[in-house]
Length: 306
Length: 309
Image 1: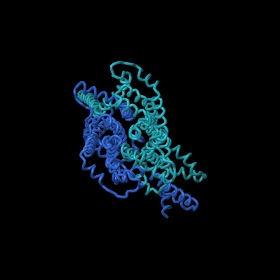
Image 2 (image 1 turned 90 degrees about the vertical axis):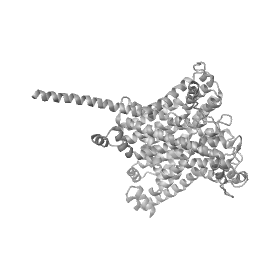
Image 3 (image 1 turned 180 degrees about the vertical axis):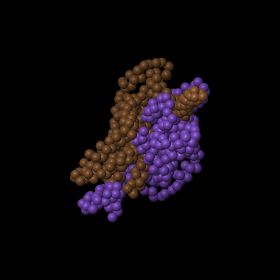
């Protein structure tokens, strides 16, 4: 019965399909194999995070023992306690959090203003600029870090301002990744708001700023949430910029901090590494768990809108 | 009396034109000011460095002297460089193909499910994309560990010979591609699932009446209907994969003996560790051509769809 209703739902309300026995049997078989293969894919997709969790609950002795690596015989939270009482790891976490929050705030202000101007107000060269923003989104960080590194060294030579090896320099760097994309998807969202709304606002005597804050921002809230999530995940996860620009242990952010401080030479403390990685992956995962639909709409908006 | 009224009208009209003009000018000025932070960020932090890296690539190691194409000549004579070219292409193309195939297959399986349960499965299948790649690659590194590999534990129980995952060049190449496919295919799955939802169900019904089997339905209906999304997702992914850094850096760091280096990781090694910034810049510039080609096609695609809408 459930399969019949499911096919009805899938076929968009055409109940005709379900009446033929052979077809419904075919559907049932499709459904069965779909579940079988999906379970296999879920196992493939969830093995590494599951293994992170398994390892994080083990002691070093158990990790190096020749027992089944996929099972925890003596679960313990000692890795978590050790990391969370350690100043160093908390510093990474704090640096990451401050950087991400600042980058999100900066990016959203810049890209909402610019997207509003580009989508609605238009000025000389605004169409070209919109395309240009999209193109800059395609330039990867791996192409930009060398010239930026050199430029920062040059600024230090000329003005004495040391930009390298400070965590806050990431607040300057991450917008290169987030601003073009967020502007691009905000242009898409703003362009989809009907023109009648801003005409009505203009007739009522609203200025452009009022139009933006009273109409566009409230109407485009789903888009703003999606862009904010994107921004946060990107700045939380970036690995190249902090690896190139920060070196002292107290200036590192999470991904680089875990890789460089928990691996000492050839000694891998896997219990702590996995715990650190799992805790580091937690904020994006928690956001994703609560705002999955916004997350997905942000993902698809990048390529389908515009 | 009459001409006074007429003159008043004319004055009013002229005045209105002036205010309108001023208004328009003011509007565009405000718009420009609103876009100014964006222009500043893009110009200073993206456009300028991109052009500066071209300049850097023409300097000698101490950045004192202009050497023209000297760095490139030096690179072309080095075996490692050609190895990196080969590995970058192999890595990017294979990974994108497998990501697309896995994403396509999984999207179809999810689409077959009853609408109510899809959300849950989609949620689970997207997790690899949500975890920061640096963190999940650490988990893979541990799964591939030479002495405690959890995969080898299975193999030992099945009687299959042990695999030196990251020690053997061929296996190491396989591993970096595998991890990349693992991270990236959920993105393809989401995009293709969204595209599948837009394929009208009537087409499948008509095909079923004509006696089409599942493969014909996919080949003659789904793929042509999804072509746009398939193309654009693959192009986006090609750019990102070609510029990939995190996975190779953490998993193999280019080893064994530089066999798994891609442009990004080799440029990093040369510029930051080797302290040869111009050479690193030259290497990273090799990412630009493929980027330009992909950007051209994406832009054409976006424009075309913009015109349709």
